[in-house]
Length: 307
Image (cartoon, rainbow, N blue to C red; front, side, top):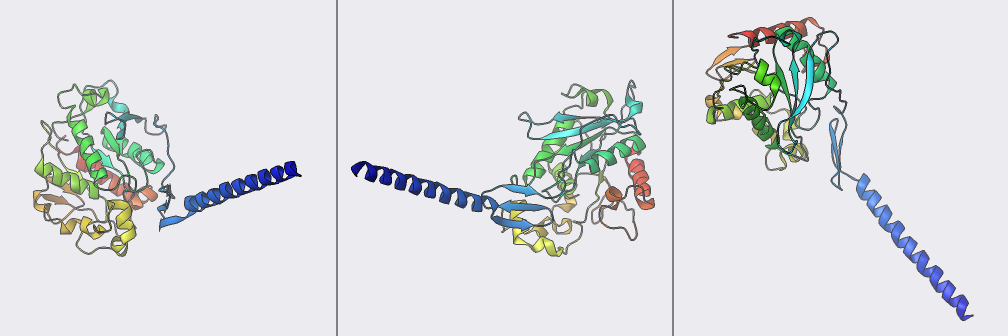
């Protein structure tokens, strides 16, 4: 009888223990699946801190472009490899002593999605490098919400300084040492231009800036007013996104570049190309349309000036 009671107590203890573990597992499962911020269609943030990126997750490896002959490779920019870039070099540059312009490209994605390895940008920059005969650097900056602003700006500035380190031909990347002409060299572009007005890159003159974005003007778009999106991108609901609008930046007059394509409201030389009846990012989503091809040639022409 006493032995039976011991077995009963043991069974009861095991049942209670299993019940407790099951309860904990259920709570963990609920926390793992409970959404804190649903920022459709781009990002979903869970209460346990996990981030699910819903778009712009596809990637492609660096390669030799079959149609263009453009070569690409990935390189680390920061010592801890947290900031990297994809480099592109045209076929004509191989074995040539001629130095080429070096545009530094900052991809779109609302600071939260897409990367320098995204097929959209990889394919577009392959075509642009071939068309313009340039060496291009596509920066892979860290993204919100894990790395809220100003991380993307800081990473982009780190990338520009890394490029400038090749001015004398003895930088860490041989492609730039051999082929980059560094005597002249969206929202991130705006902030880098402001930074250039405040802090120069030794030995390097940035010849121009190209902006393809919709943060122009003074009036915020409806989604700029969202406190959840502000929290995701800037890390604080107290910094609304409309504060990122270019037209509201009091530092605009100190923009550190003399030539800008697709920009307005500043004292340098402005070159504007209109694309009637086209939606945002049409040049990436439909690169074979007439306006996208016209834009490609405009970009190539702008970058080849003074070269």
